[in-house]
Image 1 (cartoon, rainbow, N blue to C red):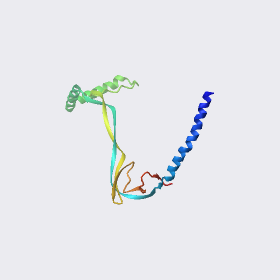
Image 2 (image 1 turned 60 degrees about the horizontal axis):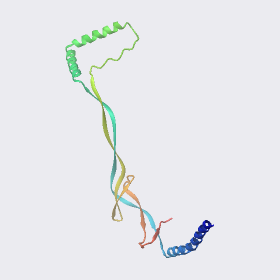
Image 3 (image 1 turned 135 degrees about the vertical axis):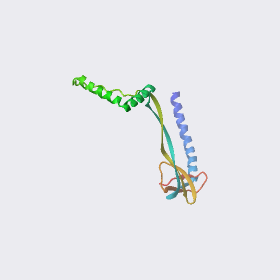
Image 4 (image 1 turned 90 degrees about the vertical axis):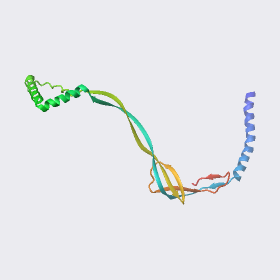
Amino acid sequence: MRFVLLPSLICLLGWQVAPAWAAESDADARNRVVVMENVKLDYAQVLNVEPVYQTLRASRTEEQCEPEAGAAAAQAGAATGEAQGEGRISKMMDSVKDVFSRRHDTVVPAPAPTSTRRNCRVVEVGREFRRPIAYDVDYVYKGTKYRSRLPEDPGNRLRVRVSVTPYIPDAIVQPPR
């Protein structure tokens, strides 16, 4: 029985206190002035636009190859031999021998290895990309200069929202509907 009485007693006291508290807040609400905001749209002259860039960094792996010293010397020797005409005849003889030695087999020959052997390694290459993410805009409205950061370039004119509200300390400003 004691547990049933306690909640009902708390509810009864709460109902008695609530009207007094509500009366105080109603009195404050009656004495406060609600100021309406006066708004209009107009245009300002744009003076300067500076893009704000975001720098993105990316990396990827690439294969970088350098010719070997022995292969480079062999290439240089082959080039001098070809210049003398000796290399051409031996190449022609080798190709004729290859044609007759195949005996018209339909086997596809393996690709001939290149004359230059390369020293290759995988290297990580970093790249940077810049893209505009916003614009710092300097503009003038009614003789006063302003600066704002905008998501896109406004062009020569910038549409502005002009709000005029009288200053009343502790006033509640209500925006227009």
